Amino acid sequence: RAPLALHATVEVPAAGQPWETVTRDISAGGARIARAGHDDEQSDRLSVTLSSAAAGLTIEAQADVVRRSQRDLSLRFTQISDGDVALLTQITVAYYRLAR
Image 1 (cartoon, rainbow, N blue to C red):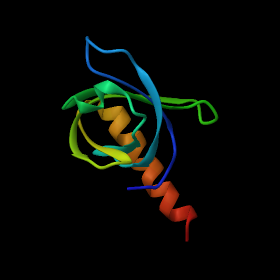
Image 2 (tube, rainbow, N blue to C red; image 1 turned 180 degrees about the horizontal axis):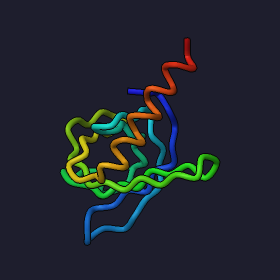
Image 3 (tube, rainbow, N blue to C red; image 1 turned 45 degrees about the vertical axis):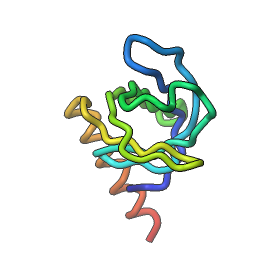
């Protein structure tokens, strides 16, 4: 996991109102996002769009909530394109190479 803050638009698939938040960390398998006090945070399955205007990237995924804390939701991606998995892997590896 890389502790990077990406913009995140989150919603319950085909049912909820989207809300905005940020990631606390990301990996190819999931993300941890900041809670925003939205009612739909209690759902077990979410649609997530991660984006960075500066980097010109958009990543879309379906995710299961695997852990809730007072501050965060931990997500495991259940549907994500192979290209987006590769991109998240590259971002994570690049972060740790630059952090040395």
